Image (tube, rainbow, N blue to C red; front, top):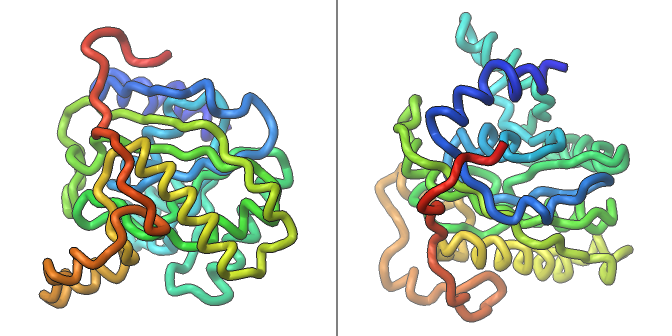
Amino acid sequence: MFYWLMKRVFVGPLLRLVYRPWVRGAQHVPGDGPAIMASNHLAVIDSFFLPLVLDREIVFIGKQEYFTGRGLKGRMTAGFMRGVGTIPVDRGGGKASEAALRTGLRRLQEGGLFGIYPEGTRSPDGRLYRGKTGIARLALESGAPVVPVAMVGTGVAQPMGRRIPKVMRIGIVIGEPMDFSRYRGMENDRFILRSVTDEIMYAIMSLSGQEYADVYAATQKARIATGHPAAAAAEERLPAAPGGRPVPDVQVPVPPEDGPAPA
């Protein structure tokens, strides 16, 4: 109930009015049954705009810090995240991350949509980073299709450190569902998990037109924080696309010239 109130009465109408979100490929989202919505991650507002353009309820994994803040703001944030069904995850890994993924698996077994950011954290510079293999495990264990998603413009509207997104059009491009049933029962094979993950990341890259960096986003953030970003020479040795594939011949999507935001 809280989810739909926020989407249709409180937050949703305001976001539509101010940011005029546009969407392509909405027909690729299954009308019923389980599906994993796998998106790039450029800003906090990604988790607001993707649900806005979907007819079905979607649940995301959210970092533990969203649920542990102090004071009025912290309590309001935690209440909002719980209200929209966000699942807390300890990004430190280990048993806590495993529990969050198991919760996602239960969501899929119940026939719902589960949203996940395979990069594990926001991109520090707008590039698409190496995907973590948890999404592949979810896909193989659940048998659910993976629907690739590209968020467009959210990183410009809300770069790192900015709380209030600047006013501009936000886009969402949704690709065709990906079926990995051919790998069912192979969820413990790390080579298969990496292959499936790279295939998903390549699909996201093909939708978003982002440059790819074959390192984890968290690793790059740590380099930046310590004043040691990857050297240009090292970057040149990275694969051009996930799994060493050639770079897809695509551009960053642009909004339609005319037309209202989707209803």
